[in-house]
Image (cartoon, rainbow, N blue to C red; front, side, top):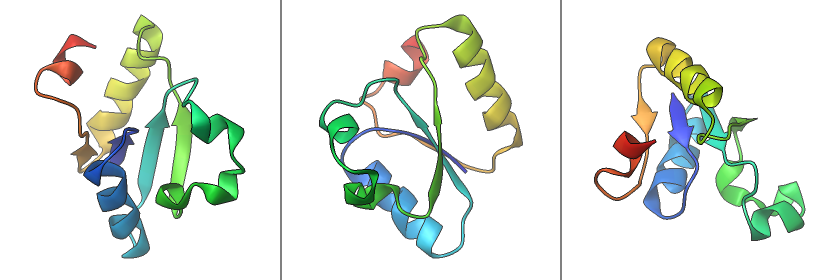
Length: 87
């Protein structure tokens, strides 16, 4: 399962699924704001997940994400309609 990092219900759903045994890989942005300043142990929504940093404004990062999605059963993304299509 691949999760595009964001806020709201998507990271929570990924955390619950990871706790139930799903292998969740979270694609993080290079800079995540306040979460970069906090101790990684404070990121409760990230528990049980693996993480990879991808700058989706770069074509090679988009290609890497699409390769990950080819092998994943589920893609979790909680953006507004059309946001993922623009990337």
